[in-house]
Length: 230
Image (cartoon, rainbow, N blue to C red; front, side):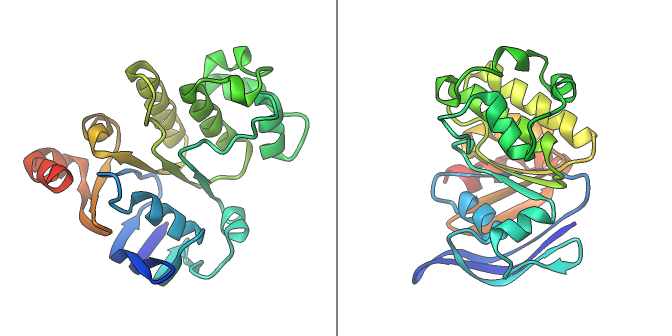
């Protein structure tokens, strides 16, 4: 589905991504973990062609999207959800969802299948939601657009363990229904990521130092910990 080939990324003259290569198969649920400043967010932004100047190639479903503007990449089916959630604070949850869908009528029942408690949030302003609730609503919006690949930046950072489990339960269900997912997490979330994803990557100082199946990663757990925490 997605191929990242010899990707280098720059903020101005400062290089932040170095020769990154990996492939994403349709149906994958991948976690990219690493310490702060490892380049995880920069990698997602580079795929979407946001903010960074880049060299190399990004191929999505056989199409070279390296130089496409972000809105055209989104139209092809890639949805990027930043760590802030990307909600408009002056609007209610329902209005944010209507805006994402581009229509007034949306299928709430479909959303309730993924998150049964959504009705309690529909008429609350986005700025009155908790951090975890904002991230949940941001993920649920992906049901309202034609999304094939979800890119999520630290969806569980700053939220409680209960909400973290809820978010991963939602992501797992979306994945089982056909959405391919790349989720970026801090190193402290390595354990929970390994419980839910089928592939894991470790980033350090702008390089993808490790990328393999979860099955193999569990056998090499000490190596992953050293890459993340040293």
